[in-house]
Image (cartoon, rainbow, N blue to C red; front, side, top):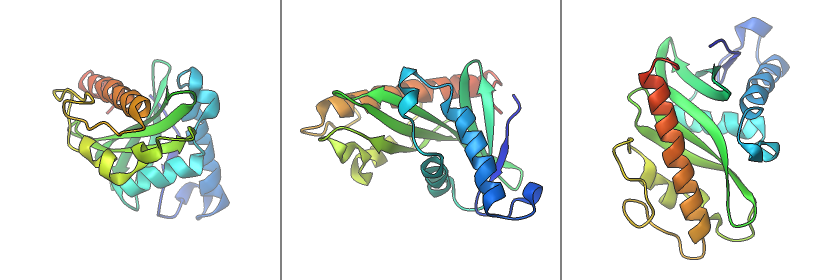
Length: 185
């Protein structure tokens, strides 16, 4: 489980400062991350958007490592040597197009946030809005994470709501299982 280290919001000591060195490391790390996603990976999120999302969720000054688990890539997020959590970028099929999203969990395996990185459908983009995404926060693998039970449907975005919710449930289960098994730490 080795990975490239990317420092967000602080100087990059390995490359003598911020700027192009940091961008290059971030690109390499996120390229590794997106190269092993589902068949929808060909339409992944821009690395800068992933970095911005991870920093929004976990805060400035974070350190991000890319870990390999089987064929998957997981972002390990820490700050000052303290583990903050993990994140993974995935894609699910909406009605006709892929929806690329990020799932972030804290060090206790509770959902920290979900971020829709790229929404390609002409309708249903409300799944990317804060009021819908915030209902995932704090959920664990013991939560049903089912539209109509603990997750609200979005009228006009039924397929997107169901697809993203299923993807989040699966990603949360994988991350929590890998963490419990010591595959990510």
